[in-house]
Length: 194
Image (cartoon, rainbow, N blue to C red; front, side, top):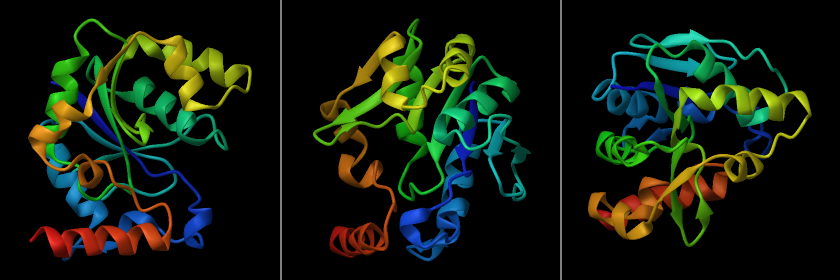
């Protein structure tokens, strides 16, 4: 069992400040989709960041405000009820419980299990062991906020695209809606998938 943290503290600058978790993909909001998938594998679901938590989750506030995803990750690890935390960005509409379970099983004795595709690592759909908390605080304290820099300081198990593809198309599973164009692309991909 692991805690699940949906990171919802971003400012969505590339999306005109809109709440990306409220965007509708395939007739449901992204947040609703993520809550269903998270609840399928955890009794401890957190929404980390600026918004209040919807039913089925608890709200966790950032202690390190203005520090991006690393600040959200710190809050998630600090408040988690379980020793491992599955982290998902609130703008990833097609993440599945099966994918999250794969990442959790891949963790083993590593500090983190992170999927990697031809687009690179995806540290905002990953699993982190609670013991990473101190290392994250070190990075935050010195203002080193890059997630990739954190990964270089951890023992990471990489989950390869070949493993991911058993659970669906990686470009869909790990898609996020950083921009309106990305949102349109996801909807187009879904319409072709069906």
